[in-house]
Amino acid sequence: MRISNRFIGSFKGALFILAVAAVLATLFYTDMLVGEMRANSRKLATLKVERLKQLFEWGNDLALQEYLSELSSKDFPLIVADSTGVPTSWSGLPELDSLPYGLAQIEADAYQREWLKQGNQPVLLEIPEHHMKFYYYYGDTPQITKLKILPWIEVMVLGGLVLIGYLGFVSIKKGEERSVWVGMARETAHQLGTPLTSLYGWIELLGERPADPALRAEIERDLERLKTVAERFNQIGSSAPLTLRPLEPAIAEAAAYIRRRIPQSVGAAVTIETELEAGLSAKYNPTLFGWVLENLLKNAVEAMKGQTGKVEVKGYVRRNGIVLDVTDNGSGIPRRRWKDIFRPGYTTKARGWGLGLSLTRRIVEDLHRGKIFVAESSEGKGTTIRVVLPSA
Image (cartoon, rainbow, N blue to C red; front, side):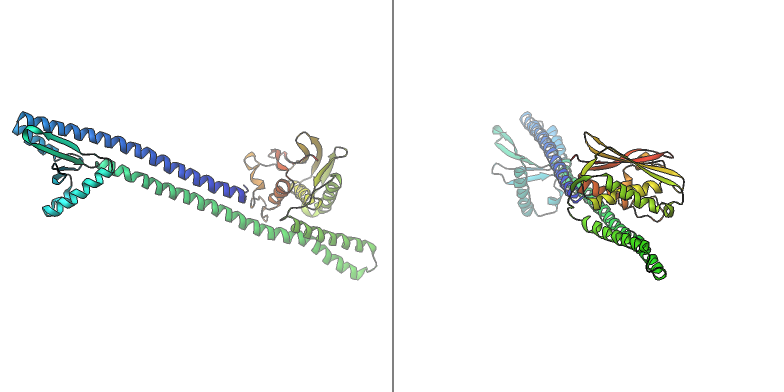
């Protein structure tokens, strides 16, 4: 799985939008529930006051006393204020019971103002014949109080989950980057090591046969290879120029290079065959696309695992672009691993770093605006890797 900087930005933006949407939805729903519960509390308080008024009017002192006792043990705080709004008694506020009456009145008055701000308007109890006029102020029930805290708990939990997800994502990205850098260093050493080793051998032979023209040709070829390697690493991180040219020379050169390495690679007879439509051309960078072809052919040869086999390169034109198929009859790839093989760090080789195909994918998709994928593979039967380049 490749993770680009653009995708990271999109991912962080999506996380932020998702978190904000969840918070707003939670706040809205909770506020709606609180509003409904406060409306129910007002209805309940109004009914209780109306009942109290009826008992006063009936003059049933025993029933009135019992109801007042019941009213003082209800499930929401209550303050009774006189006609001027001065609190005279309260219930459901145990913190006021231990205070001196005057100080408790001041605290009760603060509660009244707070409840008014919350939208809890007092219920009027007025009995003219008894010259009574009181206001019953009521606060939120314990359930409403807890419900008001719930959104902030959810915000913290959601924020924690988003943070954990983001940190995990960043950790994966950093691990991938470390793998790429280590793999790049390894790939650089490998790319440079092959021609350098050959040069050391040619230098020794040169002392024995200084005038041999064949040695000069081999040294020049290895020097050219070093130049090609340097150009590849120079262009891989930049916008490489693409030019319209035939594909056959690049494929032939890559095939010839891999054929020379087959004896050292697998120690068995592996043939490389090409079949291209006449005049097949595309816009590509020969230095970097040659690297793509070499990586695909090398992996195809190594898929034989020391057995005799055949690698075929087919090129043809389709409506969606120029298609190159590299097919081997090697060990094959399990279906669940078809995408993994292009991920940096993924390898099945004991000494591999899993960078070859990830670089290949970058060259094809990012630099050539093409596509590369496993077109077909069966375990024990072989694999076809398909490269699609845009039509010229």
